[in-house]
Image 1 (cartoon, rainbow, N blue to C red):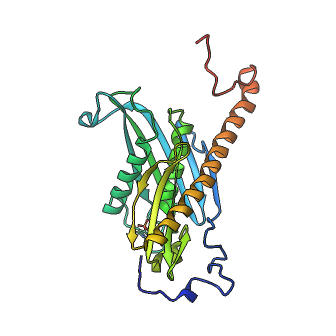
Image 2: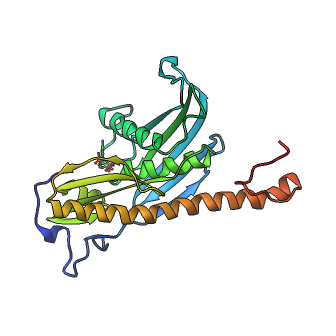
Image 3: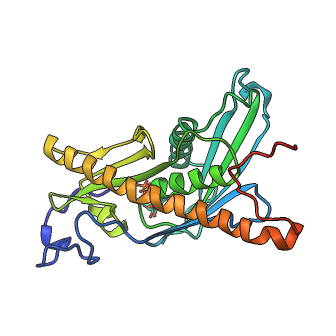
Length: 264
Ligand code: CDP
């Protein structure tokens, strides 16, 4: 975030739209697909503007190293990794402070919606790989991770999606792209749950007036609702695919994935 340029014409066209053609409260296009990997119990591929992210989930499984085990619950361990070729200037591979920070806040946000108590002493591992980055990757990664956790069949109280609003040229806008983020004056990423509308991730760069802050909150809550619907759609089509496949594979009638089997 630069914060030096405040000339509104740099960010807004004469019709009030942003340089990208989006309205101030318009998200970039978001596409979510669940269960894209053969070798992970849960996975998700997400495109959000130019961001491209894959999330994979394993567990609950034995927790190593053992000192991380919790006697009364599973631990949720999220790992955010930005690929070397995901950004314009090559990103040095490996863990850096930024990815550690994002891994931590995403772990905490997921732990707020995952039912961990039924799985004591285990770990739920969530890997998020950023293939292409264009600002907003922590939000995109958490949104993808929540779908991958649900796809793995891990019980959750609700979904969580994340989105950021920021300030460019003195105006609050939803979902900054890299061009806006580079010179943005503020950025407020938030993780919001789908049913109880709890805020489970919140970070802030730069500064807002009280009015601007409330505007950013409003934009984020409204956009989170849109994202929750896209997450649900992705999970629905995943289970429709499974249900449609069942008769050929097992010769049996398609089962309702939400129904429990009495015979087992
Ligand atoms: O991605 P997010 O907005 O959550 O985090 P950020 O730290 O505010 O980074 C904003 C953007 O800067 C990223 O999405 C990348 O496009 C870019 N970036 C980069 O080019 N090289 C890095 N080492 C880190 C970030």
